Amino acid sequence: MNAPELESRLSQLAPRRLPAAWKAEILAATNSRASRPQRGAFFRTERWGWGAVAATWLVILGLRSTTPTFPPPAGPVLTAAELERHWREVRHYAALDLLPPEPTAPVRIEIEQEFVLPIHRPRS
Amino acid sequence: MTSRQLESLYDAHAQSLFAFLLHLSRCEETTRDLLQEAFLRLSRRTLPPLLKPRSYLLRLAHHVWIDHVRRETSRARVLEAAALDPVFLPPPAATADSELAVQLAAGLGELPPDQRAVVHLKIWESLTLREIGAALGIPTHTAASRYRYALDKLRTAIRPSLENERA
Image (cartoon, rainbow over all chains, first blue to last red; front, top):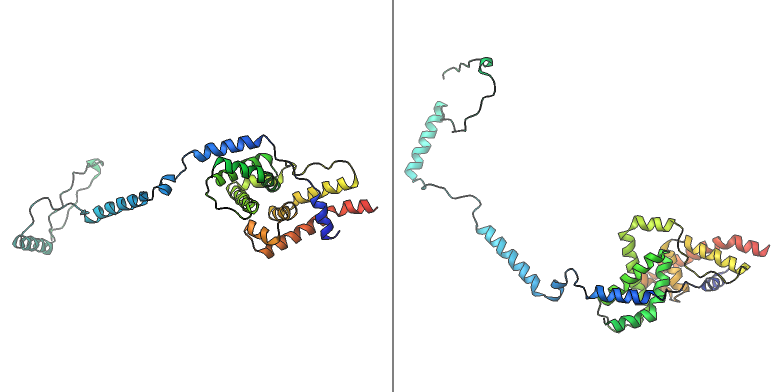
């Protein structure tokens, strides 16, 4: 069967008819859904909305960049002489390997004392 | 778009869109949803006067179909594989011609949706291959090759029926 004959046979096939009841249903549903507010419709109609969003972000970023990321020192700032004395003291203790221990929270000892051997540290 | 414009477009073109979408989906329920979606998209657009509204609407319907397939790929495969709603009216009488028509309809159902879309637009919408390419968003030569492959497959599908007719 050649192509024109095949096309002619195909065109004799009749597509099904559109159900008549659909018209009212589809048009009614379309009208009701079309009148419903769409997602993002505000930004499509109100162009200034994007400007407001951008301005808000700029304010947030500006505040972030000017806000210090660590708290300022609580007490008064040390003078140069006081700093010098502090570092002298640190160097002195470092030379003796006797830096004062950092103040830490007391640690609760869970191990029973009788199993702990006394530790003798050699004096330097 | 006003509801009056929408109604006039429905009256003029809904049958074509229905046949096209039914041919692609082969499911009446899906076709209804797709037709609804097509008219909803249409209602939200502000259209300039169209030179060829039918071609525009067929293109819109094809986009709706593509979106549907992308959204529900697994379900579309199930629909493809299942026994589906008839796309064509049954032939009037049980003759050799009607048997051939049944074979052709079955052969069309076996075609991949891309080829089926091209055949539908060529045979039942009488679009040129260039217009089909524009409607489906494919080059003209791709539309032509899909059409040729489809006709070859249909020829193969109806061969037993033709041989019976000759015998």
